[in-house]
Length: 179
Length: 179
DNA sequence: GCCTCCATGTAATTGGTTACATGATTCT
DNA sequence: AGAATCATGTAACCAATTACATGGAGGC
Image 1: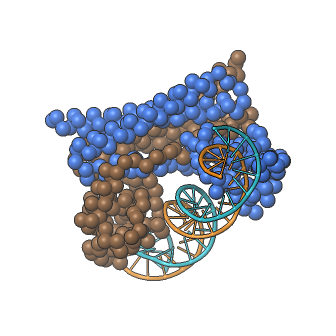
Image 2: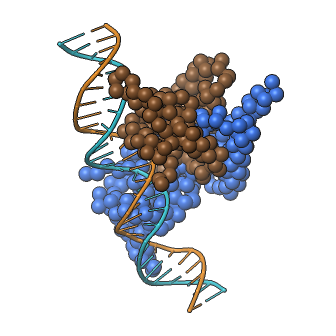
Image 3: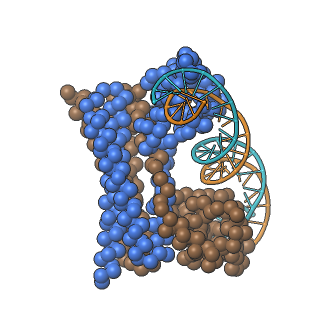
């Protein structure tokens, strides 16, 4: 009996809300979940087959263009709940942009400044997007949507913190230059 | 001619600073780099062989207990610089803890609260560690070490933002309960 | 003599991305 | 008729983790 990975749990979580097809699930990963977890259809379809074989989801209907809908079974919902209540795995940040910072001493000062400006700009752009999205969701305060809004808030605070950090790092350098 | 991945660039960056053995590189990933990128020795040793074959690093000496030291070649240093100056890849956060947030509606309120408290506690713990580490590095303001301190500041701001977010999310819920 | 740390490697497996491949429906 | 979108799948490859495997040096 193969254990369920993070992708499997994400799929079960989505299917615990409502029945969906592989295609709809794929869109969910492109849309709402994109900012915390990603997955392509090429990973999703085989995973659905495995979850079905494990009895955690079941086929419910076939749509017009050959689409297949799935719903979480009782065992499936129980498995997501178990996962949610489980203690968090020791998650570490994995950021290529921050990794590069360790090696910036290899670049001339003006290129370092360019780097940090680009970094800040990217975070500010995302911040604008996230805030616009938050405005649109604001009114919904019931059910699953609400938790999307709460997760989004984490994204907003993250981008804010990273943009501010990049500005701080740039100022650190500048002060240094003028000395 | 195989292209160099992120791990390869990280190794080149470290070796551009000073010559090191595979074992020392492994420790560097456990220690300073651990918070932004991770790698095991089983991934590092084969990668060193590839970098050497590509002429980006070269063997410099053999230590007593069979250790092999490597240094970045000119081509190797040029490659890190190229990588650093290159525009950033579209990096997205990948967080299982935040993914779980989308599905918290499946848990009873008290378990949600437990989840968010655990989340906050973890971030606060890391914050304490990072701040202690920052204190220790503070005095060094030259060379590679300085950039380690700047990257650490990003970690501090990240943990701070996430801890505050978890508290905010919990309060959101509480306010709701009392209504 | 035994344990710990230093030191390097390979093998097996999982997770994830990119590319390949195909076909139906709807819109213009 | 042609393009965009819906819809599902497989194959090849790359990245990363876990487990397997071995041996030397130094401290107790």
